[in-house]
Length: 281
View 1 (tube, helix red, strand yellow):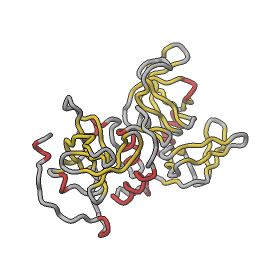
View 2 (cartoon, rainbow, N blue to C red; view 1 turned 30 degrees about the vertical axis):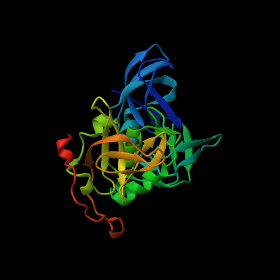
View 3 (cartoon, rainbow, N blue to C red; view 1 turned 135 degrees about the vertical axis):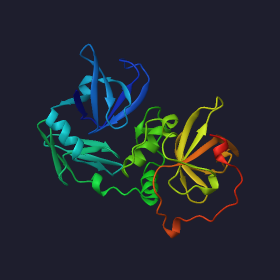
View 4 (cartoon, rainbow, N blue to C red; view 1 turned 90 degrees about the horizontal axis):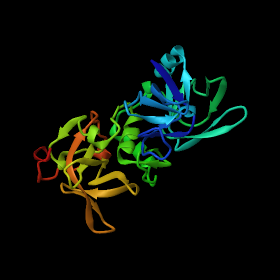
């Protein structure tokens, strides 16, 4: 198998080998792909090693890896925790977004493709990731006001599945790429009133298909992507937009994807059960 690493800030993954085709996802700096199929010299079909998402990208937007590099970069890396932070090389600076990977990072720098990259921002190594509700909500709020973009996974533009995936990625939890796949992960929460901060809520469209997701906050709020990353009210019917005084997304189910250790300040009072979500799913 051949592998490659994204060496640019953000790279589109497309549904077919054309710049005019749909963007289905994105690669961030330092993320790895398996090379599956070539279309001429310009396009290559890839599988993202993080979430198994498959699509096409321009071949010059990734750098081939040796088997030694592939093994090293899989085992040793850190995540960028800054919203944007420049990577400094001897002859250029390149901004990388939240969630990018720093391969073989030693706390100050790393080497790749014959260059030394210096990184002075916040970073976290996988062994120090904290899968707690407090951590999840802190990361989620960093994306606030990021614009909606179909297939996006960065603060430059992000979609619903990309937002939840990236947030949980930085606490060490793997989520699939899209809401209709993520809904099959985790444990069912029978009632929205039983949900806790950091749980995922999923919403259905008019055809009954899971098409949206978001992260539950305290006080009956949810952070999700609708035109932008935003916070709205939620109840057992769905998401309520106070600006338009209407429900915008119909709730289908809530899921718990991590063990909860809630601090007292995040605890919510028990609410009378009104609607069993298990009956919806």
